[in-house]
Amino acid sequence: MLLKDDKKSSNNVCEMCVVSFSEADDPYYYVCDSCDYYVHKSCEKLPKQINYHFHPQHPLFLKPHFKSFCHSCGQLPKKYLMFSCDECDFYMDVECTQMSTNSISTCPNEGQHCIQHSTHPHLLLLFDTSTTDMNVSCFACQSSDDIGVYYGCIVFIKHESHMHNLNLVDSCIDDTFGDYYCDICEEERNPRLRVYYCARCKYVAHVHCVISEVINVLKGDIRDVKLKVLGEDVWEFPNKEINYPTLQLHPTSSLNTLEDLIHKLTRRDLDRLKDHFYWDEERNKTVEVESQEDEVLKLSSFTESDFMHYIFKESQFIYFKKKLGIKMSDLALKIVGIKGYFIPFNLASVMKYLLHKYEDISNKYYSKEFNSIGYYFVCKVMKEMHTTLVADITKNLLQQWYHYLLFASNDARFEVDFLWQFLWKITREFYYQQLRKLVEIEFPMKIEKKILELQKKIDEYHAGLDKCKKLRESLNSTEESMVKQGLEKALEHKWKLATQF
Image (cartoon, rainbow, N blue to C red; front, side, top):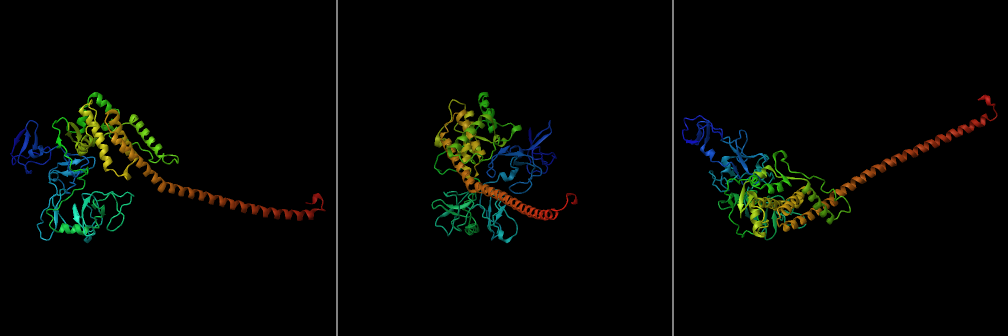
């Protein structure tokens, strides 16, 4: 294709963004005269896929969109071209994805307090929600908590209730008794929600309990204030002094995604993988091994060891009899190279931690590609274990973890004893969580239901008994009156002839 800059004379439309060259800001475009194909130079240079920090779950793909609003700025794109995630129905226009990270800007009007946030192209003003009846919710975390003023993302504050600085954390689960309270108001808190926290003193505060200090920070000089984006630290380990190797994208263009990596497997390795997993579009749904989570727990004789044995045996049966699906969104994940292995970008930090702490746990006799698949499953399990609350663990999730580890240990021959130990502990904890649920909630409910059913039957029996007694009394009284009448008549008829009746 030829590069031209004949903007004024061209009324053709760009094949990518569907905007005519006479209306576009970019004067340069490529053209293929034989095919009548035109495309802006700026559009051609755009990456076809990106990993964006505001949507870390899946990669975003460059596609034309005509009626989709940007999830960041809330506007229709200037060009009909957006980065999108079809699985989550998530859209970002090109301009918003190219914005820098959080920064502080000065508002043009004196007396206004604002920040420049990476999720929005315009300055954000400090807004007091108590002055309006609007249902205001945070775009970043979707929270609509009535806290008076929405604080955004101030990381550190100093509050009069505590001697040390408080750090904004995504969640705080340090209590050992399962009860979570705010140390300021002493009311119960949701462990899944963000809080301000002092790790040294184990001091926890609701955001709305320290909101006055957050407002003071926002109203002051915030040019040096550190901001935080929800979900940035998805995988963060306590030892930050580790000198991890520099993360490099794999240079081979033929290995861009996890799907490319699978296609690089030898026929023998591919058959091994296909024995236990599938990833074709026609079956793009993970096999859900659904059953009632506490089906066996309902047996009064079911012990901890029985449950552990049952889960393992059932998981082995599923592993050899059923296949687990690899989602299309996971297949599209961009891979990076770490010490000769290829791993999806969103698991890179886990992989680096794994190699640093346990070194290479793979089987050296297998190919790098096949071992990379094994590392993908191991890192996936590690990340999910690290980010899943015990209260959110289901039997189905446990069986998926067993499935991944059975492949890593049985087929890939990885040394994953440390993960098996974690999984056994998690399984044991799951057992007691289900048992607690059974004893504290389900058993009382079932017993109460049974009592009501029995009481209803007792009431029905009593009603029937009373009815029978009344009937008996009625029969007795009727019988007595009939007998009396019969005796009187017998006395009257005693001396009459038989033919006189």
